[in-house]
Image (cartoon, rainbow, N blue to C red; front, top):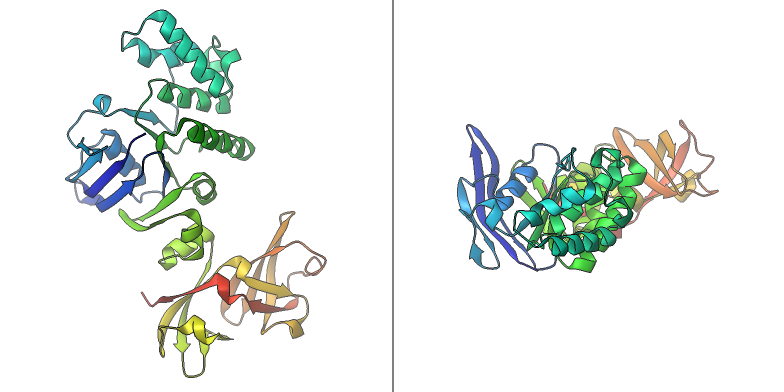
Length: 352
């Protein structure tokens, strides 16, 4: 297990600053995800850690060893690519054994090591199967096995599940997390999928425009977002430009006027702010008398255990997530409903 430290990493491509002064510390044995939208610099940052890209400035160390100028093959890195990068003309065994053969290991030792790693990813019975005959999920597990078989100090994964269908993606990410826990290998995982990062990670770094917006555990990031971008990107929150009236103990967002607890307004006076409301922080009732505010249902999306609604209050549209129940199942587009806010699930941020 190895600790990774990035200090003021930047990467310039012509006129584009892809990564800007990123500093991170990743603990030994940690599953650390870098999350962000397309083009935010997350893959560039991973490639810098791997040694495929050199930073314009800054340093990278693994276990206190400066590897900024060290070639990829000497960093102790295992890499799983988005397209898996398997050799299509080889069998499963030949793909996984390739890295060991370059180390001039004895043939029987290679065979034992490959069998052991295939057993850990539940593919031992496929050892002699040509790679093109495997399913997408099986190919993904072969790619992980090939990276792990050389016993790297660090495992890097670049959107490894993006080519799988939804059901297989869910199953495979569970297998990846179990395997990482079993091996204890320090893992850096790049994804644009919020649920993937939340379910897999010990900690997450959210990137935007080449910078780190926030770092924390999934719970910290979701419950206490540091910016409106993190709140909206990670949790799908309602992000509302608002005006705080401390004297009246109210928050005004367009035509939505809310009475807020005094403690919620601590640190704010009469000033502009950003109100962050998680979809599940809004309690929806078919009776307008049960709500603090009356809303009109614009759209309903039944998802089984939960039901999502879009509701309109004046000029403000709110996303609402409710448990499916008798209480809400008869609500339809155009219906009036009462809404209340669970202030413990809301955040008030300074105006950006």
